[in-house]
Length: 333
Image 1 (cartoon, rainbow, N blue to C red):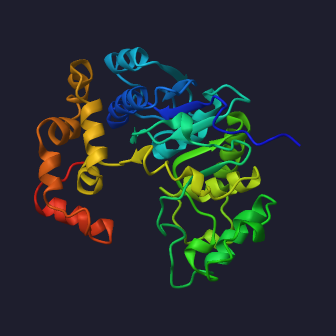
Image 2: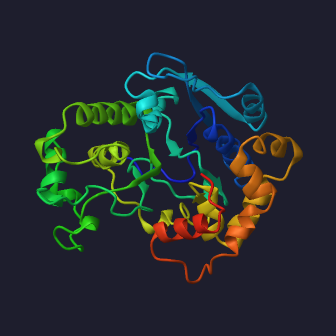
């Protein structure tokens, strides 16, 4: 039996590069990877959706952003949307996996992620895929006549011939959301992007086009990727990440999502890293073209947001944080 693959093996990284907000986030990601993970020996691939029948507007990045991404060491690879496109842009992370070299371990990150430590030191076991546990009980949604967590999740496992019982966290009570395998799709990894991506695509299209009867009143937009991801990971022999991966969504990466929320909730170290990475003039010139970066990072609005909150006593619910920022007139997406 082969020994588990560890952090000593090189791996590739994929993010999505798309015109608008994501292209500027891709710049920050690439710059932070270069600055804070000098031991990373793999390749950074930026998957770029192309014009086609599933996009009303051109999704491609601007030429100056592409040039700077290339200068930062990224490889930009175009792909055609076959199943999702503009109506479900989260599908880019599903369809884009096929641009990666088959058979080479990979880690996917949402583009709105900041690298704050050495990724090469994270002990990935690529033979056992996993994904981010930085999630809340967003799906399934409790409804008056819904069949319950177990019935909904079991219907999905049954659809694809997967063993439902072995996916459960039996330390959690029955019909409590954390008993069921559920991830944030902000990062995930595996041994072979071709196999992972093919399964991810097949499962997502099947659930979208012909959901099990138990899902009849359940929303799938924007949750489809997170509904299907646990099935893909479980089917490939993976599961919940162990404590060795706590650096992800911790000291090594920060999935900031929106700069308004980042400045409200991030640690002093994370804020300092973001601002240091964003400081070089060539990068600054491009990032300032995106209004949230311009105002939050370079014009100081982020620190005004920061002054509204005590990081040691944050509101329990994100909605309350958002509302407080909005009430102060500082909210930006």
